[in-house]
Length: 572
Image (cartoon, rainbow, N blue to C red):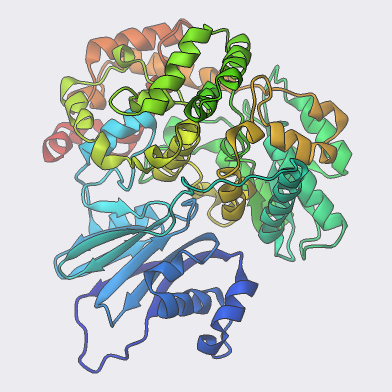
């Protein structure tokens, strides 16, 4: 999907919107067909549905389209070009406004090549080194990505941003019988998987041996066995390494579902390859992604399912002790004390500390900073071990209020951690389809919008309680899993494979001591050298953030050879 529009509107322009670009899948087709049949004129394609929704309801009509998609619409009546991306931001859409025209593409490298953009955006660089991504920005100045759940209206005079979807911060679903939560969870999860298997080709699913990916595989297997979907076969792809604790669980799920599994070794196909970091964006895309694409292609698969977003959606929270703010606000002193004691036992934190945090959250600003609501696996970066230059620190410290939404602060204090994590997921777009897998419908059932809206609206203690993360999920989906998996509490991480890949890169960087990230004024040389030495020795060095610096350095070397580094640095 690539295009360009020049700002000329003929006087006799037909006043009907036109879809100039579309990439995606519509999950609520039947509903839209009933509502828009008078405008469709027999055309039931996805593009026709989206055009009709926009024609009938305007910008709000795009929010009625559920699925993974991005779209470009030409609106003669409004004299504007409309860009929009779905709730989860799975299908990327980039645009660049130039004098007299607007250019767009669903591939960043295509747009960068077309616009011949070389100037780097230091705000993106700072956010990338801190968080791995930057809301609505790309590495290139003037080239933007449509944010998840956002509408961008571009006219000859400027740009207007609108929200396609807002988190249900004020919604609360309460049932008198807890079994209704289980039933609704199961119904919506089944629908999330079913909507993604509307293909007569085989499907593949990522299987890590954890609860999320296993739930997706087990549900997909059930739907296929009962012939509830056109898809006739599903296989799994798993990433394994020496000493992995996941392999027995992976094999258990494969045997339980009676499906074939492909095991890709991270030792044979590395997670990261310095030579592969030459795309338009610095990213961990390498041999393992290519091996995954090759395996899916050999099976004739068109759909690739993952378990991503499961941790957030299902309440996989070890510490959700801000739940204590709920009884505190209601004056339920006994319940507040019991809950605080329960969370204290689980987290091994003092009861008074938990009560103090809950009180700060309940009172709100200025007593509750955003750091109070860090949760869902998110960790605060240790500011003393980042290696960023003073210039880059100053730039990013001036940006947070403008870059990141604070809408999550409108949620009740006991739910703000959940909505903050959801907001970051939308803004940083970790669910976006990797470039190597763009030939597949890369999709995430746990990011099915109706399911997310439901789970973000139930009381927090329904999802998770002290010592009971994923409480609702385990009850609702437990019977689908093999018995061995039901007792699993956590899964292994990829620390060892990452270290094996990073170690030779670190050695090479230390030997050369000519770093573009330093020459460009982004990273402090002494701090970086010290941390690289610690990483090579296996010592604590804030490895996840250091990995971002290494990725950026390798990307810069591939995109801009050392001989042109200083010139490029001056230009940016």
